[in-house]
Image (cartoon, rainbow, N blue to C red; front, side):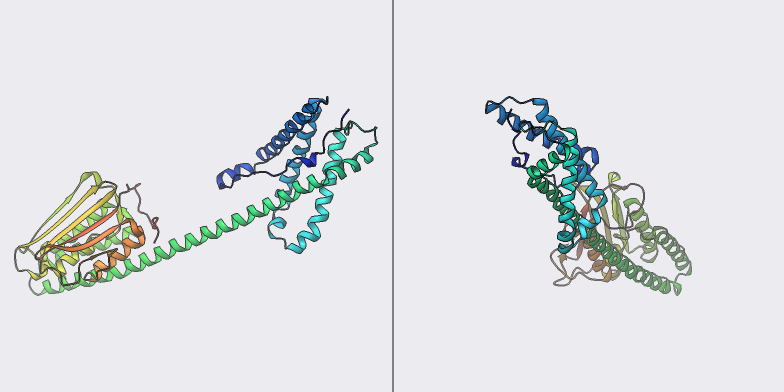
Length: 395
């Protein structure tokens, strides 16, 4: 009877899926060992076809059993190698790999051959019967190159997985640091904005104290409400639009007291966008800027219009006011530069950039003489019911 062809002639190269979600499933012991066993069965099928095309008669069961058993053993050995020696595989220096890995690989190959030979006493089939240990030595020499290829192929595959995981972990940490930095910048901008708003409001109250004590007292109550809203938000960076509208309406109520009879204002919000997420305190600074740099310059006939609606996949806010118009060079957008005017607009620009990167649009322009319009466009996203304390759109 013919000798079973040397198993070392079969290719031991294994193609692995590099996708992380697939790789985690592959390292499950059942999946991993089954994959190795399936590879052995493919080699068995290749050998069976070669033998039978050559005109030799050999037991089909013996061919498939011997190859399947060998690769089943290697699947178990390699998985145990990964589980037990993962730290050594990933961190060992080249010197330690050579000094420890080579003797260990030879011992492992010999152990695998001992187990395999115990289950297949009839192999080699064309050889005179041999005792157990001579058969172990015979098959060990014949299969050594293939066994070493399997061992070291698995070793460097596992080492590659370790490098890849470390790389992904570093990328994750770096992304977290970027997000934390962005959130820190946003928090700093919020801290800058609150004193600015408080300072302007206190100035308004101070000016009313001399002429209308009742109005000043009402402003203090409304200011207290605004501060309470601010404290309730805590560190939330993204809030539902209806909360921002409530804050803005309270602020508008304060300004109605101060500019009674001088400004006509309207606030229109599409009911479908009430639950959209927006950066906290994004409208009030623009409205405040409209009063400080435009409407306050008028003795009568001031007009302020706020419109919020959905435009496709974006939320769009338009704030239009009359006043003195823009100075030369003050038109611009978040992309195109433009200095804008006031701490409020610069703050809004920076926060939009930190929250949404290039996915937002911000512009200020004079749509007609002495009529200025600020436009904000951000990605439309519905609120889940709680404020978001972190930015999720990158810097």
